[in-house]
Image (cartoon, rainbow, N blue to C red):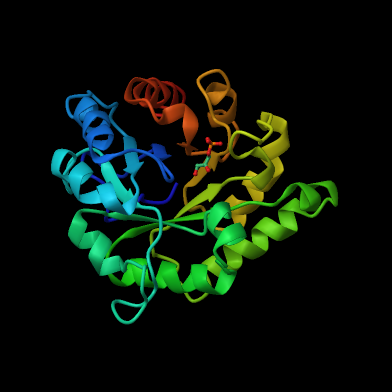
Length: 258
Ligand code: 13P
């Protein structure tokens, strides 16, 4: 498995498993503080790399409790590809890095669907993250129609290829497979057999870079999903927004993969 990245906590060697959550557009600063505080003294398994991706408003607050260089990586949910300039409402990679982020989520399907995130922009953001030493976490996934048409592998492979266009082979990038039909309250949780072939294609196109699975991951299906060949970690929304549940999911991942 590929090295997890210079942004990852430096414990003994590269991570062998990943557990992360994006809070999407949830949590006040008080809630962010409570969640992060609950993680401060967790005895994480060796080889497990936890990460938390707050909304931009809470990155600095979370990073005060979970600082760069510590065992929990803090991320940003998005950032612009330019370093600065007249882009009202946007934040840049240097800005989220300054706030304490060491990981950058890119290309989540909600951004692709609602905010015009194209494969080309995803690639620009991967390059921007790498330029500033952040670990890119690129989200890919087919929608229900594409799956029904039998084109999931082709769609996802093309997304990965586009994201990594011009990226050096040695560059550390995480890839998250999040089928659109499996995400969120209206999603249908995937069965392990639904995802195995696409995961294998991401491993191949991504040249062995770590692959995380996301989309309606929960305590009762995490074991089956982390056990899928090629899955190196889980990327969780709703089911990990409570710190105790995040830690419980981390334990499942650690038991099965470290
Ligand atoms: P849910 O786990 O809430 O389905 O969200 C998954 C996701 O989009 C993580 O980025």
